[in-house]
Image (cartoon, rainbow, N blue to C red; front, side, top):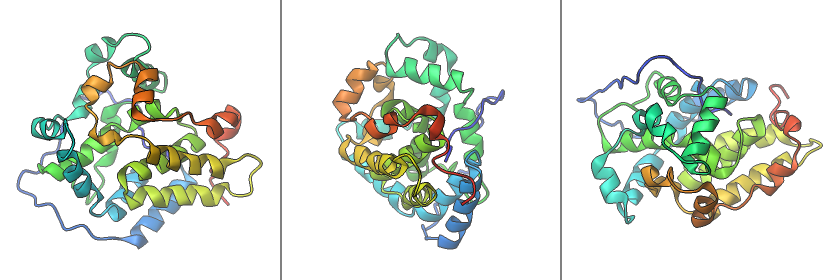
Length: 259
């Protein structure tokens, strides 16, 4: 269920579509189910995640943007409309974070895993995806995409099959996007009957996301400088006890490629 992409050696170049209107959202279950099958058979096929999101997330992005405007910091964040992927590709900024901070944990994570915000940007540009349109809702969609790996850090879920499935469930609770729900249910269907409590771990991911503060309303410039332990406490992110109880070597077996 990977929603990360490997390091690319090219700078970010947004494919701006200034005159393109935001299309009216419509649900495409057939498209989503076919993409889910491909994703479950190859969890590294990140493009299928964006295909599912495009097909099913409907009005959730617009509702998220409207909710952002009601938060204390949201009006300013929306007005500034920072392209956060560009910030996440700034090595000097990443190197400035002190030990123990959210930013330091993120920096170590992406470098050890050889990930890149730019890689995720490129993968998200699937055919028919309006993610680069100059529109507040499209910007909010990009912001949601760009903070995914930070949510890995905050939630404590790694990039193994189970960790991605748990984070997908966590993300559904946070965003209410049906695409996330479909992927989580797909992972659950492949995890049933196993020797480890994979399904319980995924369900706990949803409950943890629901209990936590709304992460899309956070000021990530400030959050990245916050001590990780303190940030989790402030945001109400509880420990991933079931996920942590499963041996690391068994976590990738949670979502087998074939039933």
